[in-house]
Length: 94
Image (cartoon, rainbow, N blue to C red; front, side):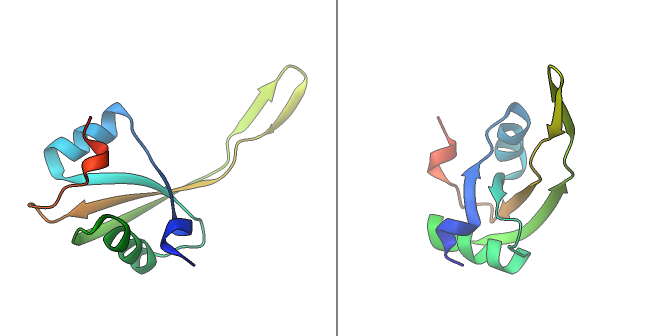
């Protein structure tokens, strides 16, 4: 897989921005087939930073309902990437 296929999008929420400020951790939605090594290489290649650690969270599909119709929300995989103290990803800072 290509690096651009592994990293789908950044997750920007209040909690993820606190992780950036306090712990230098960045959150991304990633492809479900990617493992930690592939995620690490993709982040290092796309953003030119040094990755220390990668944590992966697999979410289960939740049941959703719209009127009389029921279904499930899509499964997602999130990756929390810890960078070296001196490294930053500029696209996260507003």
